[in-house]
Each structure stands twice: as structure tokens, then as C-alpha cells.
Amino acid sequence: MIVTTKKLFEAAYGKYAIGAYNINNLEQCMGLFQGNVDSKAPFIIQISKGARKYSDKRMLEAMIRAADEIFPEAIFAVHLDHGDEATCIDCIESGFYSSVMIDASHEDFETNIAITKKIVDLAHARGIVVEAELGQLGGVEEHVAVDESNAKLTDPKNAKEFVERSGCDSLAVAIGTSHGAFKFSGTQGLRFDVLGEIQKVLPGFPLVMHGSSSVPQEEVARINAAGGNLKGAKGVDATQFRRAAELGVTKINIDTDGRLVWTRVHREYFLAKPEEFDLRPIGKVFMAEYAKFIAQKNDYLGSAGQLDALRQMLSK
Ligand code: G3H
Ligand code: 13P
Ligand code: ZN
Image (cartoon, rainbow, N blue to C red):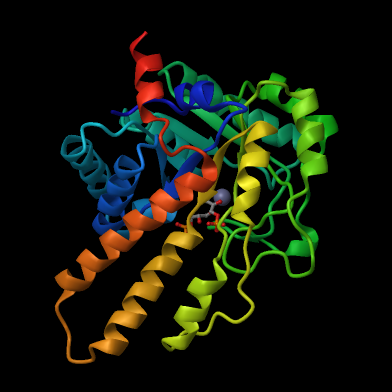
């Protein structure tokens, strides 16, 4: 069942965070649904601009609608990740997305508010909710690259004004994370001091943490042992997710870790079976491993086991 992120956040706020997972293909889609149903967790499917272009945006939509039928017990939101204005409008008009992110975080404060408000007005008229971003993460996104030294943490002093004037429903905050597999080049970690300040000025308001892959060292070691080269890859400590959730983070974005599962599975499989050339056996292995990964991640997020309580809340 597709719901808005607003509903998911109402259930989760202060208690746990919802996993927001990016998908691009059928195998990720099936593994994602299986993993969440296995761990009885609500979830958010994230679709980036790049994912919409990879095959065709209609293909992703058709796959997700089919998965919704195959897994009738699943409760999830369909969310555009890092949208620009045109993509947000396309998703709002599609009638399929329950949530969009307008990412104008690279613009100045006033322009970010103006662009966000425009999308909020269009989205709300159709019952769709909007995530916006204030501050800038390090790492590479589709339309903008930011090196870690230029990343700007969210200024708690501006956060309340931004939310009030833009009308956004949730806010992505920059608190030290970055996108991709190479986070925290020094000894930095999550800035709970900044997050705490933001929660003080926005009590009860859902916050979002991008760039939250953990880049498990065991996964990196296995990839490198099977011919990869991801030396120095590092991520967020997943045991800190619960603390972030207590401070108002209700959505935690994870993409890179799923790509690492894909890379490890394929590298190890073909290294062990050089004579193999059938895509289905390896596809099956990946779907099972991805489902296992999602269920484990939901344990860290605290979303595992929350599905029945959420269903009850939604039926009231
Ligand atoms: O933040 C970006 C997400 O990981 C999506 O990545 O734009 O390569 O699909 P993508
Ligand atoms: P990671 O690169 O840490 O997985 O972050 C993904 C993300 O923020 C998607 O919006
Ligand atoms: Zn992101």
C-alpha cells in the first residue's frame, strides 16, 4: 500500500527512523520488498533522476505497482530523491509519487525558499508531501558536486524560518554526512550537537539524514579481495541511527550500501564461477542478499517490527 511519508513520519517521530532506499532495477525492487516484509518494516522507495533515466521512468512505476500486488502486506511511500523543479513537477503530475524532494540547497537562502515554496504549493494541491534541504552535504549528486571542505552544515538559526516560509513537510539537514562510499576523510562523525539545536527550534518536525550508508568494512574487504579497489571507503556508524531518531530524524537515506551488496555479490560470484554466464542464478543470489541487507538495516533503524502498529494507526 502506498502512503505519504507524512503518515510514516507521524508513526515514527522520536521513536525510530524509516529506511529510504534507492532502487534502479527489478532485482533491487524485489529484494527491497522482500526484506521489508520479512522484517515487518514500513519503508520509503527512493527514485532519483538518474534512476528514472536508466531505463524509463514508466518501467520503475510499473515494477513498483507490480511489487505492491506481489507483496500486499507492504506499506511504503514512493519518493523522488534530489529532484530539481522540472522533475518534481513531472512526478507530482504523474499521480504516482506520494512524496517529492526539491533540492535547491545549492541556491542561496531566499532562492531555496522561493523554489521550495513553488513546489510545495503544487504538491499540496494534489495531496503530495515535500522534503526540502537546507545546508549542503559533501559528495557527488547528479546535478552538483561538493567536496567535504565546502559542505555547509545546516545552520539551526535559519531552520525554523526556512520551514515556516517554504511550507515543506520535512527537512533534510547537513550534519556531517556525505553521499557515496568515502565519508569522513578525517575523524569527523555525526554532529549530534547541530542536530540537537535543530530539533530545539523545530520540535516535532520530521528531519531527514542523507548520505547515511555505513559502508561496512567487511563488505569493502570482500569486494577488494574479489578484485575491487575501494581502498579507504568509510561510512556512518549505524549504531548511531537510534540516537538520531530520538533527535527528530525520521527518514534515513541509504543507497551506496545497496550498491556495495550488488558489487560484492557479483564480484565474488563470477570470481568463483568463471564459466558462468547466466544472469538469473546470480540475480536470485543478489535478491536474497539484498533482502537480508534491508532487514538488517531496519534493525538498526528501529523500523523492523513496526508494520502491524502502523497498519492499526492507518486504519483509525
Ligand atoms: O544522493 C544520490 C543517490 O545516491 C542517488 O544516486 O543519482 O546516482 O541515482 P544517483
Ligand atoms: P549514501 O550515498 O550514503 O547511500 O546516501 C544516499 C542518499 O542520501 C540518497 O539521497
Ligand atoms: Zn541524498
